[in-house]
Length: 211
Image 1 (cartoon, one colour):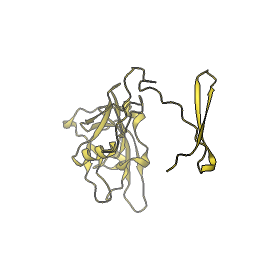
Image 2 (cartoon, rainbow, N blue to C red):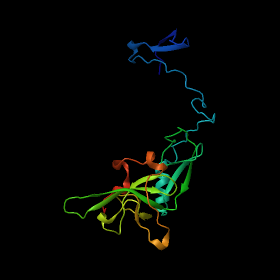
Image 3 (cartoon, rainbow, N blue to C red):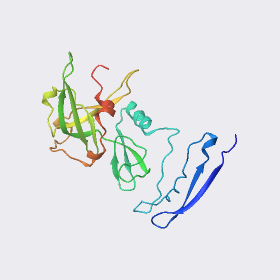
Image 4 (tube, rainbow, N blue to C red):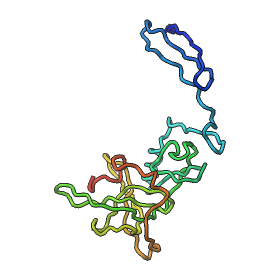
């Protein structure tokens, strides 16, 4: 395959830095393709000066790792080792630091209801939808079962229970009330995970009962 002819133009930007623009001659069937500025160094923008490692997604995506833990009955999350910030839903890079230095950990599955609502589908039983603050510091969207949806309260202590899923739905976590003898009740909401919880449309925990 022949390489299309091109021309290079050198100029200086408003800051005096030299730039090079590569233009592919359009009569060869190619659009004008300006050359992108050189990428910043690996440490650029990193206040701590650490290398910014972006993990390879060719073998296993963060979602596939998360689902593997779900199949084992585990609620997994990530922690950015640059600043020790918990990350959830699973990601390739930290939404706070932009770093790919993410470490997988397994939650104890204990948390507190941050907010709750009841959803009504036609000809179906009411469904609870809740935001849960896990003790490890992240927040996730799920639901509380084994209780009347109207009886779920902000500040209620809960523990995770994994739904096995089926051929149409992968496994996903829900929560049930935590009995007093299983752990000390704790009131209140909030939590460091507020900025990391996913939107309702993207989270499998909102699957309807019976799916």
